[in-house]
Image (cartoon, one colour):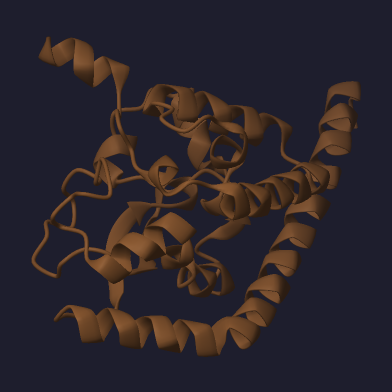
Length: 219
């Protein structure tokens, strides 16, 4: 084995062990969370259905690990006739939002069905948030490294970014995570996310501006 091969091996084995441990941790936590939160999720599903006609679960195709498409699950927060791929609500007053859906977004409870995505191996507890396939198609080779890991329920950008960050900044945060991912960083992100949710004001969840590039193109 050459010195280069040996160096590559030293880097490969720790990362392989981390990925294996992370997948086991994800599956265990997702399973336990579903067992504990199952009754709560049933109540939420019933509330969504009673308030607004349509399914309780919102399903949408996203770009996943290594660019493979998958179907993300959330509790439905908007009217069933709203465009599934339309712009995200910019505030609580958006007429597409239901009353129950508004509360679910502001408490992040709409994300709970993604525990099933994690259990199935499509997502991780921590990783870059999955975006639309059409968004991923616009990335350059460097930005596509965001797809080198499973998408997450929460990520570095969500835990440590400011409310109102634009997509360009979120991608940079996500690339930092991909380069520096570790079990310790994952635990820090999870703890920070819980703290953010507990201290969050409702308006912080709404996307005020999306992209600096898009804004310049429209000027």
